Image (tube, rainbow, N blue to C red; front, side, top):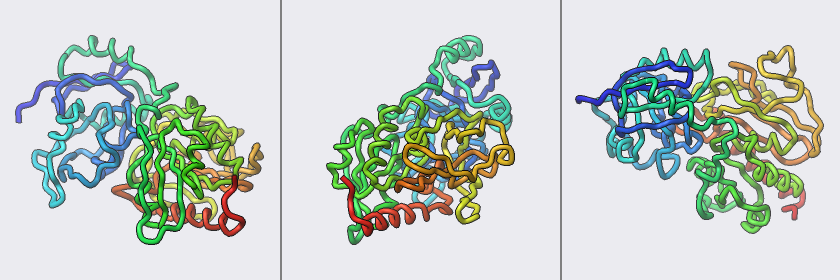
Amino acid sequence: MRRRPAILVLEDGRTFRGEAYGSVGETFGEAVFNTGMTGYQETLTDPSYHRQVVVQTAPHIGNTGVNTEDDESARIWVAGYVVRDPARIGSNWRATGALEDRLATEGVVGIAGVDTRALTRHLRERGAMRVGVSSLTEDPLELLARVREAPRMEGADLSAEVTTARPYVVQAEGEHRFTVAALDLGIKRNVPRRLAARGVTTHVLPASSSIDDLLATGADAVFFSPGPGDPATADHPAGLAREVMRRQLPLFGICFGSQILGRALGFGTYKLGYGHRGINQPVLDQSTGKVEVTSHNHGFAVAWPGREQGLSAVDAPLNQVIDTDFGGVEVSHVCLNDNVVEGLRAKDVPAFTVQYHPEAAAGPHDADYLFDRFVELIGDRQSEGGKHA
Protein backbone atom coordinates (compact mmCIF):
# COMPACT_ATOMS: atom_id res chain seq x y z
CA MET A 1 0.00 0.00 0.00
CA ARG A 2 1.33 3.39 -0.98
CA ARG A 3 0.80 5.83 1.86
CA ARG A 4 0.87 9.59 2.12
CA PRO A 5 3.85 11.12 4.05
CA ALA A 6 3.10 12.23 7.61
CA ILE A 7 4.97 13.94 10.44
CA LEU A 8 4.75 13.93 14.22
CA VAL A 9 6.03 16.99 16.09
CA LEU A 10 6.33 17.23 19.89
CA GLU A 11 6.04 20.57 21.65
CA ASP A 12 9.78 20.58 22.39
CA GLY A 13 10.43 20.39 18.63
CA ARG A 14 11.41 16.72 18.35
CA THR A 15 10.15 15.47 15.00
CA PHE A 16 9.41 12.00 13.64
CA ARG A 17 8.53 11.21 10.04
CA GLY A 18 6.33 8.37 8.84
CA GLU A 19 3.26 7.63 6.76
CA ALA A 20 -0.43 8.40 7.15
CA TYR A 21 -2.33 5.68 9.02
CA GLY A 22 -6.09 5.78 9.37
CA SER A 23 -7.59 9.13 8.41
CA VAL A 24 -5.62 11.70 6.42
CA GLY A 25 -5.63 14.99 8.27
CA GLU A 26 -4.19 16.75 11.30
CA THR A 27 -4.69 16.25 15.03
CA PHE A 28 -3.38 17.54 18.36
CA GLY A 29 -3.34 16.23 21.91
CA GLU A 30 -1.12 14.98 24.71
CA ALA A 31 1.46 12.41 23.62
CA VAL A 32 1.38 9.33 25.87
CA PHE A 33 2.60 5.76 25.44
CA ASN A 34 0.87 2.46 26.17
CA THR A 35 2.97 -0.62 26.90
CA GLY A 36 0.25 -3.22 26.30
CA MET A 37 1.08 -6.08 23.95
CA THR A 38 -2.62 -6.67 23.27
CA GLY A 39 -5.96 -4.94 23.68
CA TYR A 40 -5.50 -2.10 21.17
CA GLN A 41 -9.23 -1.99 20.44
CA GLU A 42 -10.02 -1.52 24.14
CA THR A 43 -7.38 1.22 24.34
CA LEU A 44 -8.78 3.10 21.37
CA THR A 45 -12.35 3.06 22.72
CA ASP A 46 -11.46 3.91 26.34
CA PRO A 47 -12.91 7.39 27.13
CA SER A 48 -9.97 8.05 29.48
CA TYR A 49 -7.80 8.58 26.36
CA HIS A 50 -9.91 11.55 25.23
CA ARG A 51 -7.59 14.30 23.85
CA GLN A 52 -4.53 12.05 23.97
CA VAL A 53 -2.37 10.82 21.09
CA VAL A 54 -1.49 7.24 21.97
CA VAL A 55 1.89 5.73 21.06
CA GLN A 56 1.85 1.91 21.04
CA THR A 57 5.16 0.53 22.26
CA ALA A 58 4.32 -2.92 20.83
CA PRO A 59 5.65 -2.76 17.25
CA HIS A 60 3.02 -4.81 15.44
CA ILE A 61 -0.51 -3.40 15.67
CA GLY A 62 -3.72 -4.45 13.93
CA ASN A 63 -2.91 -8.12 13.46
CA THR A 64 -6.23 -9.32 14.93
CA GLY A 65 -8.37 -6.71 13.21
CA VAL A 66 -11.38 -5.25 15.03
CA ASN A 67 -14.75 -6.66 16.03
CA THR A 68 -18.10 -5.47 17.35
CA GLU A 69 -17.76 -6.94 20.84
CA ASP A 70 -14.57 -5.59 22.42
CA ASP A 71 -15.27 -1.84 22.36
CA GLU A 72 -15.28 -0.19 25.79
CA SER A 73 -17.58 2.59 24.56
CA ALA A 74 -19.59 3.59 21.49
CA ARG A 75 -16.67 5.22 19.64
CA ILE A 76 -12.91 5.67 19.40
CA TRP A 77 -11.78 8.39 21.83
CA VAL A 78 -8.04 8.79 21.19
CA ALA A 79 -7.08 12.07 19.53
CA GLY A 80 -4.46 10.32 17.39
CA TYR A 81 -2.66 7.02 16.99
CA VAL A 82 1.04 6.23 16.52
CA VAL A 83 2.32 2.78 15.51
CA ARG A 84 5.52 1.35 14.13
CA ASP A 85 4.45 -1.60 11.98
CA PRO A 86 0.75 -1.79 11.05
CA ALA A 87 -0.47 -5.22 10.06
CA ARG A 88 -1.15 -5.60 6.35
CA ILE A 89 -3.86 -8.17 7.06
CA GLY A 90 -5.90 -8.71 10.22
CA SER A 91 -6.52 -12.36 10.99
CA ASN A 92 -8.83 -13.57 13.76
CA TRP A 93 -12.02 -15.60 13.77
CA ARG A 94 -13.79 -12.83 15.72
CA ALA A 95 -12.70 -10.00 13.40
CA THR A 96 -15.36 -8.07 11.50
CA GLY A 97 -13.06 -5.52 9.91
CA ALA A 98 -9.58 -4.02 9.65
CA LEU A 99 -8.17 -1.61 12.23
CA GLU A 100 -7.06 1.00 9.70
CA ASP A 101 -10.48 1.03 8.05
CA ARG A 102 -12.08 1.63 11.46
CA LEU A 103 -9.67 4.49 12.17
CA ALA A 104 -10.41 6.07 8.81
CA THR A 105 -14.17 5.68 9.20
CA GLU A 106 -14.13 7.44 12.57
CA GLY A 107 -11.76 10.18 11.39
CA VAL A 108 -8.85 9.20 13.64
CA VAL A 109 -5.59 10.64 12.31
CA GLY A 110 -2.63 8.33 12.78
CA ILE A 111 0.96 7.86 11.71
CA ALA A 112 2.82 4.60 10.97
CA GLY A 113 6.45 3.73 10.35
CA VAL A 114 7.60 5.75 13.38
CA ASP A 115 10.46 4.61 15.61
CA THR A 116 8.13 4.20 18.57
CA ARG A 117 10.97 2.97 20.79
CA ALA A 118 12.87 6.23 20.33
CA LEU A 119 9.67 8.23 20.79
CA THR A 120 8.81 6.36 24.00
CA ARG A 121 12.31 6.87 25.40
CA HIS A 122 11.98 10.59 24.65
CA LEU A 123 8.66 10.81 26.50
CA ARG A 124 10.09 8.86 29.45
CA GLU A 125 12.95 11.35 29.71
CA ARG A 126 11.04 14.56 28.98
CA GLY A 127 7.53 13.64 30.13
CA ALA A 128 4.15 13.56 28.40
CA MET A 129 3.71 16.67 26.29
CA ARG A 130 1.59 18.20 23.58
CA VAL A 131 1.98 16.78 20.08
CA GLY A 132 0.68 17.20 16.57
CA VAL A 133 0.31 14.59 13.83
CA SER A 134 -0.26 15.72 10.26
CA SER A 135 -0.50 14.21 6.81
CA LEU A 136 -1.39 17.64 5.35
CA THR A 137 1.98 19.33 5.81
CA GLU A 138 5.60 18.16 5.84
CA ASP A 139 6.89 21.37 7.48
CA PRO A 140 7.76 20.66 11.16
CA LEU A 141 7.98 24.34 12.10
CA GLU A 142 4.55 25.05 10.69
CA LEU A 143 3.05 22.19 12.70
CA LEU A 144 5.05 23.05 15.84
CA ALA A 145 3.45 26.50 15.98
CA ARG A 146 0.00 24.91 16.12
CA VAL A 147 1.12 22.30 18.66
CA ARG A 148 2.14 25.05 21.07
CA GLU A 149 -1.28 26.66 20.72
CA ALA A 150 -3.10 23.43 21.68
CA PRO A 151 -4.57 23.14 25.22
CA ARG A 152 -2.61 21.32 27.91
CA MET A 153 -3.97 18.41 29.93
CA GLU A 154 -3.33 20.29 33.19
CA GLY A 155 -6.50 22.13 34.04
CA ALA A 156 -8.60 20.20 31.51
CA ASP A 157 -12.14 19.43 32.73
CA LEU A 158 -13.25 16.69 30.32
CA SER A 159 -15.86 14.57 32.11
CA ALA A 160 -18.78 16.44 30.53
CA GLU A 161 -17.37 15.64 27.08
CA VAL A 162 -17.36 11.86 27.57
CA THR A 163 -20.24 11.17 29.97
CA THR A 164 -23.54 9.61 28.95
CA ALA A 165 -26.19 12.06 27.78
CA ARG A 166 -28.94 10.25 29.69
CA PRO A 167 -29.16 7.57 32.40
CA TYR A 168 -29.30 3.90 31.45
CA VAL A 169 -29.45 0.60 33.30
CA VAL A 170 -27.37 -2.58 33.02
CA GLN A 171 -29.34 -5.40 34.61
CA ALA A 172 -27.89 -8.02 36.95
CA GLU A 173 -27.20 -11.46 35.55
CA GLY A 174 -29.24 -14.13 37.28
CA GLU A 175 -30.61 -13.25 40.69
CA HIS A 176 -30.58 -9.51 41.54
CA ARG A 177 -28.70 -8.81 44.77
CA PHE A 178 -27.88 -5.10 44.91
CA THR A 179 -28.33 -1.82 43.04
CA VAL A 180 -25.39 0.49 42.31
CA ALA A 181 -25.52 4.07 41.05
CA ALA A 182 -22.47 4.64 38.81
CA LEU A 183 -21.36 8.20 38.08
CA ASP A 184 -20.16 8.18 34.48
CA LEU A 185 -16.96 10.23 34.28
CA GLY A 186 -15.86 8.13 31.29
CA ILE A 187 -17.02 4.67 32.24
CA LYS A 188 -15.92 1.53 30.38
CA ARG A 189 -18.52 -1.06 29.41
CA ASN A 190 -16.74 -3.79 31.31
CA VAL A 191 -17.43 -2.15 34.69
CA PRO A 192 -21.21 -2.78 34.74
CA ARG A 193 -20.55 -6.17 33.12
CA ARG A 194 -18.29 -7.21 36.01
CA LEU A 195 -20.89 -5.98 38.50
CA ALA A 196 -23.73 -7.69 36.62
CA ALA A 197 -21.87 -11.00 36.87
CA ARG A 198 -22.11 -10.60 40.65
CA GLY A 199 -25.86 -9.95 40.72
CA VAL A 200 -25.62 -6.16 40.71
CA THR A 201 -27.93 -3.91 38.67
CA THR A 202 -26.07 -0.74 37.67
CA HIS A 203 -27.72 2.62 36.98
CA VAL A 204 -25.21 4.65 34.92
CA LEU A 205 -25.77 8.39 35.44
CA PRO A 206 -24.38 11.55 33.79
CA ALA A 207 -21.42 13.28 35.44
CA SER A 208 -23.62 16.27 36.32
CA SER A 209 -25.95 14.15 38.49
CA SER A 210 -26.85 15.29 42.00
CA ILE A 211 -26.99 13.31 45.21
CA ASP A 212 -30.77 13.20 44.81
CA ASP A 213 -30.33 11.67 41.35
CA LEU A 214 -28.11 8.95 42.80
CA LEU A 215 -30.46 8.20 45.67
CA ALA A 216 -33.50 8.15 43.37
CA THR A 217 -32.17 4.94 41.79
CA GLY A 218 -32.63 3.14 45.12
CA ALA A 219 -28.89 2.57 45.19
CA ASP A 220 -27.35 0.34 47.82
CA ALA A 221 -23.94 1.75 46.87
CA VAL A 222 -22.22 4.25 44.57
CA PHE A 223 -19.46 3.81 42.01
CA PHE A 224 -17.24 6.57 40.59
CA SER A 225 -15.87 5.64 37.19
CA PRO A 226 -12.58 6.19 35.40
CA GLY A 227 -12.33 9.13 33.02
CA PRO A 228 -10.08 11.73 31.36
CA GLY A 229 -8.77 15.11 32.45
CA ASP A 230 -7.28 16.81 35.48
CA PRO A 231 -8.94 15.73 38.76
CA ALA A 232 -8.13 19.16 40.23
CA THR A 233 -10.91 20.59 38.04
CA ALA A 234 -13.58 18.08 39.09
CA ASP A 235 -15.19 20.07 41.91
CA HIS A 236 -18.72 18.75 41.37
CA PRO A 237 -17.80 15.02 41.57
CA ALA A 238 -15.60 15.67 44.62
CA GLY A 239 -18.49 17.40 46.38
CA LEU A 240 -20.80 14.55 45.38
CA ALA A 241 -18.38 12.01 46.86
CA ARG A 242 -18.48 13.90 50.16
CA GLU A 243 -22.29 13.76 50.13
CA VAL A 244 -22.16 10.01 49.53
CA MET A 245 -19.76 9.47 52.43
CA ARG A 246 -21.87 11.63 54.76
CA ARG A 247 -24.74 9.22 54.10
CA GLN A 248 -22.49 6.21 54.82
CA LEU A 249 -23.30 4.63 51.45
CA PRO A 250 -20.62 2.21 50.24
CA LEU A 251 -18.43 3.94 47.64
CA PHE A 252 -15.92 2.44 45.21
CA GLY A 253 -13.83 4.57 42.85
CA ILE A 254 -11.57 3.48 40.01
CA CYS A 255 -8.75 5.54 38.44
CA PHE A 256 -10.18 9.07 37.93
CA GLY A 257 -12.82 8.09 40.47
CA SER A 258 -10.01 7.23 42.89
CA GLN A 259 -8.49 10.68 42.45
CA ILE A 260 -11.91 12.26 42.99
CA LEU A 261 -12.35 10.37 46.25
CA GLY A 262 -8.84 11.45 47.26
CA ARG A 263 -9.88 15.07 46.75
CA ALA A 264 -13.11 14.49 48.68
CA LEU A 265 -11.04 13.19 51.61
CA GLY A 266 -8.89 16.33 51.54
CA PHE A 267 -5.84 15.14 49.61
CA GLY A 268 -4.31 16.89 46.63
CA THR A 269 -3.50 15.52 43.20
CA TYR A 270 -0.55 16.00 40.87
CA LYS A 271 0.46 15.18 37.32
CA LEU A 272 2.82 12.27 36.78
CA GLY A 273 5.82 12.74 34.51
CA TYR A 274 4.62 10.37 31.81
CA GLY A 275 1.84 8.46 33.57
CA HIS A 276 1.04 4.76 33.85
CA ARG A 277 -0.51 3.24 30.73
CA GLY A 278 -0.40 -0.44 29.89
CA ILE A 279 -1.39 -3.87 31.14
CA ASN A 280 1.81 -4.88 32.94
CA GLN A 281 2.06 -2.60 36.00
CA PRO A 282 3.01 -4.33 39.30
CA VAL A 283 0.98 -3.18 42.31
CA LEU A 284 1.30 -4.24 45.96
CA ASP A 285 -1.87 -4.81 47.99
CA GLN A 286 -0.58 -3.65 51.37
CA SER A 287 -3.29 -5.50 53.30
CA THR A 288 -2.36 -8.93 51.92
CA GLY A 289 1.21 -8.50 50.68
CA LYS A 290 0.10 -9.82 47.30
CA VAL A 291 1.63 -8.36 44.12
CA GLU A 292 -0.81 -7.96 41.23
CA VAL A 293 -0.05 -7.38 37.57
CA THR A 294 -2.54 -4.69 36.61
CA SER A 295 -3.89 -2.51 33.82
CA HIS A 296 -3.36 1.26 34.13
CA ASN A 297 -4.34 4.40 32.29
CA HIS A 298 -3.75 7.51 34.36
CA GLY A 299 -1.61 10.62 34.12
CA PHE A 300 -2.47 12.04 37.55
CA ALA A 301 -2.14 10.64 41.07
CA VAL A 302 -3.20 11.30 44.66
CA ALA A 303 -0.64 13.26 46.69
CA TRP A 304 -0.16 11.54 50.04
CA PRO A 305 0.53 14.03 52.88
CA GLY A 306 4.22 14.53 53.60
CA ARG A 307 5.23 12.71 50.45
CA GLU A 308 6.30 14.87 47.54
CA GLN A 309 7.10 13.66 44.05
CA GLY A 310 10.48 11.99 43.77
CA LEU A 311 10.71 10.72 47.34
CA SER A 312 11.04 7.01 47.87
CA ALA A 313 8.78 4.96 50.11
CA VAL A 314 11.62 4.83 52.63
CA ASP A 315 11.78 8.63 52.80
CA ALA A 316 8.00 8.94 53.08
CA PRO A 317 6.30 5.78 54.37
CA LEU A 318 2.89 4.95 52.95
CA ASN A 319 1.68 2.77 55.83
CA GLN A 320 0.49 5.48 58.20
CA VAL A 321 -3.18 6.35 58.81
CA ILE A 322 -4.09 9.96 58.03
CA ASP A 323 -6.98 11.62 59.88
CA THR A 324 -9.55 13.34 57.63
CA ASP A 325 -13.02 14.86 57.97
CA PHE A 326 -14.33 11.34 57.40
CA GLY A 327 -12.03 9.57 59.85
CA GLY A 328 -8.85 7.62 59.23
CA VAL A 329 -7.62 6.85 55.71
CA GLU A 330 -4.78 4.58 54.64
CA VAL A 331 -2.97 3.72 51.42
CA SER A 332 -4.19 0.29 50.34
CA HIS A 333 -2.17 -0.22 47.13
CA VAL A 334 1.22 1.01 45.89
CA CYS A 335 2.83 0.85 42.44
CA LEU A 336 6.10 -1.07 42.74
CA ASN A 337 7.67 0.72 39.76
CA ASP A 338 7.66 4.19 41.34
CA ASN A 339 5.85 4.01 44.72
CA VAL A 340 2.87 6.01 43.45
CA VAL A 341 -0.29 5.69 45.56
CA GLU A 342 -2.59 3.25 43.74
CA GLY A 343 -5.45 2.89 46.21
CA LEU A 344 -7.05 4.36 49.33
CA ARG A 345 -9.17 2.78 52.05
CA ALA A 346 -11.29 4.75 54.52
CA LYS A 347 -11.41 3.13 57.95
CA ASP A 348 -14.49 4.89 59.34
CA VAL A 349 -16.75 5.19 56.29
CA PRO A 350 -17.42 2.43 53.71
CA ALA A 351 -15.26 3.78 50.91
CA PHE A 352 -12.23 2.50 49.00
CA THR A 353 -10.51 3.10 45.68
CA VAL A 354 -7.89 1.84 43.29
CA GLN A 355 -6.16 3.99 40.69
CA TYR A 356 -5.89 1.15 38.17
CA HIS A 357 -8.40 -1.05 36.32
CA PRO A 358 -9.73 -4.27 37.89
CA GLU A 359 -12.25 -4.37 35.01
CA ALA A 360 -9.35 -4.68 32.55
CA ALA A 361 -10.14 -6.06 29.14
CA ALA A 362 -8.26 -7.73 27.51
CA GLY A 363 -6.67 -8.28 30.90
CA PRO A 364 -4.88 -8.99 33.18
CA HIS A 365 -7.48 -10.13 35.69
CA ASP A 366 -5.38 -10.25 38.89
CA ALA A 367 -7.44 -7.44 40.45
CA ASP A 368 -10.92 -8.71 39.53
CA TYR A 369 -11.40 -9.63 43.20
CA LEU A 370 -11.93 -5.93 43.96
CA PHE A 371 -15.47 -6.21 42.60
CA ASP A 372 -16.02 -9.03 45.08
CA ARG A 373 -14.68 -6.75 47.81
CA PHE A 374 -17.17 -4.06 46.75
CA VAL A 375 -20.10 -6.48 46.79
CA GLU A 376 -19.02 -7.80 50.19
CA LEU A 377 -18.86 -4.22 51.50
CA ILE A 378 -22.42 -3.61 50.29
CA GLY A 379 -23.59 -6.82 51.96
CA ASP A 380 -21.87 -5.89 55.20
CA ARG A 381 -23.58 -2.50 55.28
CA GLN A 382 -26.94 -4.10 54.56
CA SER A 383 -26.52 -6.51 57.47
CA GLU A 384 -25.52 -3.63 59.76
CA GLY A 385 -28.76 -1.78 59.21
CA GLY A 386 -29.60 -1.26 55.57
CA LYS A 387 -29.45 1.92 53.53
CA HIS A 388 -28.62 5.28 55.02
CA ALA A 389 -30.75 8.28 54.10
